Length: 387
Image 1 (spheres, one colour):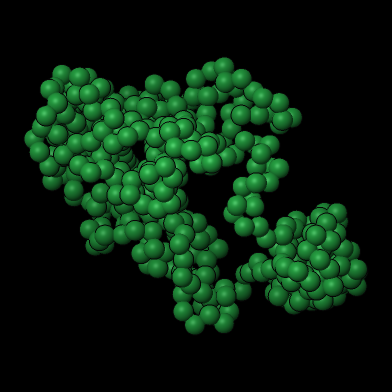
Image 2 (spheres, rainbow, N blue to C red; image 1 turned 90 degrees about the horizontal axis):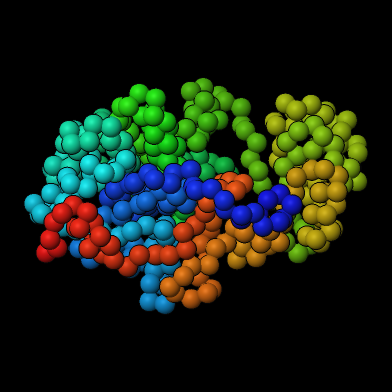
């Protein structure tokens, strides 16, 4: 970790979640990303995996015979391989839960109850337990029992059709590999768990947290959520690339000062007095026309020259980068945002925790546990013999 000057900062104090123990039953993405964030903050994560392990252990891309995708989401966690359908596995959890702070799960609603490991059952053993459930639609309502992964929530939340609408001439919703709903749900769960930990300090009470990825998506779509309640809403700004002689740049002349800078960079000061653009409301209405005017200039410029000219005038602008290019920038290096992982090969990197704490031990724990690596430790803690 570095400070704002680029100098190395000593990690002189424990992470903010040091001493917090989490029983993590989650798999795939939404739950594991939440517990990955907690691990980055110093929590001890006990990842409970079924026989054969989390499905993502076998997902590409693979490095050194192991899933780098799984490693990205699950670094810094201990692994407990356990058959929860058997009485022995359930008894082990009942014993361990007395010594943990948080339970995290992302099964379909009802699964934990059928296992006898739901909030009510475990809170009877640990009254101040914080139990967080992450699911597609939440724990109640007519859709609660539906299976859902991120693409399903993208389609059902309105997100995909909104993206189609913004493309203008698209004839079908976009194909995607993104997992927005998973990451949003995980981030809301992470925040809620930490809020519940603070509440427990004040009240001594535990909590059952119910996070729905659908609700997370609706919260993200703030403008669209409000516009959907109007018969004829104004069209919002749609940020689009402008072309150069050898590529594209993205510009965001959102504020009056940004707009002034863009007009000057393009050598078009007359746009400042143009009634289509002079006032903020007019610019929003005629946003596409404004970009078309600017593109007449940018089409005569290389990407390098266009980006430099616009930035010099104080308008936010960037060229488009591939992900590998973005990972290799000086800014990424200065922040230490890519961390090498141990146990595979040196080229295997994961994205570090987005939040940096000055002097605090916050960040990726650069190791990935083998399946069941910590079984002996937790059977011993529970006072049980391993099968």
